[in-house]
Length: 286
Image (tube, rainbow, N blue to C red; front, side, top):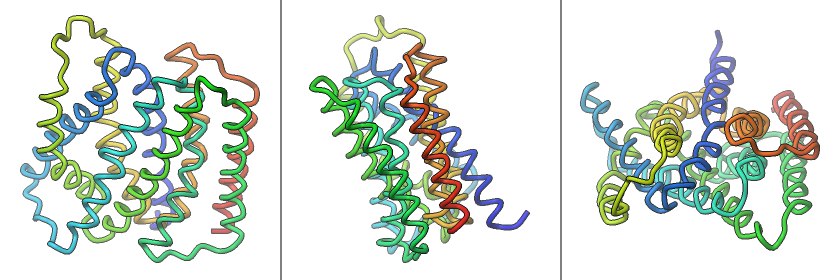
């Protein structure tokens, strides 16, 4: 298997894992406060990451890597989890996952700014078309009650694209799983302290589904998914493999329907179908 094919395969596995993130977050915020959920998932993943780094005797990153690790941590360890948790207090998981189709454009933009990638003009055409479809969906389905959730999701997408591109760039030097582990490790002290202060007075009313949601976003969304995702981006290119996220809403919608019994409109499926065509076009010309 050549490097490009391996990159797409690893990216696809990572995308599948991430597809469960928003439905799991939606389940978790039914019982957990969004701020506590954010710091708790980062703390749990951070503890596992530190254990892995120590067990495998990984060398510490160089001082010049500190800025990239900090940007990665701000984007994917803190920013995306926080703003998606806030958003899911106002909108459904099914509504939120469609915004994920904006991630490839954000990842590609930051790939140009931070990693020096230069995709072809036709690539940008397909990427912008897919993003425009998602933006149109959001506008058609927004109302006074969920506009705050939409705004939170847009912010989450921006910071996540930044973290994806920065982490992928650093993965070429440190390795995919090492980057997310180090990003989690440097985030652990402030996240653990915040978790102690934000911890609810009692866990008696926390349901089993909420605990399962917390476990999923802590281990799979924060750690395991990134092992595959960063490796895929580093192997196949940040902008090109990043287009796989246009497929994520499709899988996210199915999970929202199965796990949360949320209604899935024909417009949601139509939007996802059109963005799938966009990702196929982007892959062809990239």
